[in-house]
Amino acid sequence: MRRAVCPGSFDPIHNGHLEVIARAASLFDEVIVAVSTNYAKKYRFPLEDRIEMAKETLASLRGIVVEPVGEGLLAEYCRQRGVSAIVKGLRSSSDFDYELPMATMNRQLSGVETVFLPAESHYLHLSSTLIKEVFTLGGNVSEFVPRSVLKRLLAGPASG
Ligand code: ADP
Image (cartoon, rainbow, N blue to C red):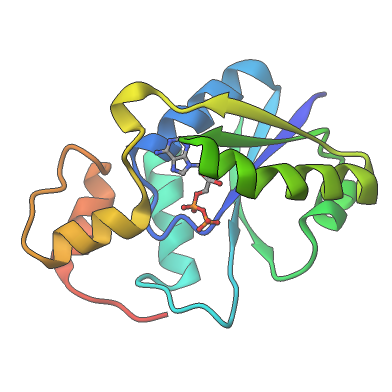
């Protein structure tokens, strides 16, 4: 059983995330979408909503589990859950520069490998931050996010 993890805050999950998660699911037997919370960070959506949106969106894909990852070390989480790889989407060289030291550190801490998947060209520009900004300024984000996310964005601001 080859188990991978796709970690992130998913605030909210968007089509770029979904594409990478689907590709990870085609490479591994099980993919855990591990939703993180950093209590020093301000999120638009509380953890429960971020998990709920990911679950709703990924319900039709096989071999995917969505769960909270907590605040501890990802390397330790991977060790405890028998995860063999962390899967990350790469949008740019700055993503790579940011991810490389973490990948090496995680391997040294727990032996877990990081697999980088190049982001699909259609989604290279997508980030949760930019989508929230465009939405807040009145832009149409319907082609960037799944339906359940759009519904929640339209329902109004949440805190968490
Ligand atoms: P963070 O933990 O930095 O808040 P996000 O929740 O925004 O991260 O994203 C989680 C992961 O999803 C990123 O580390 C990256 O691997 C991947 N990702 C984010 N945006 C995209 C995209 N547009 N295309 C492909 N992968 C992406």
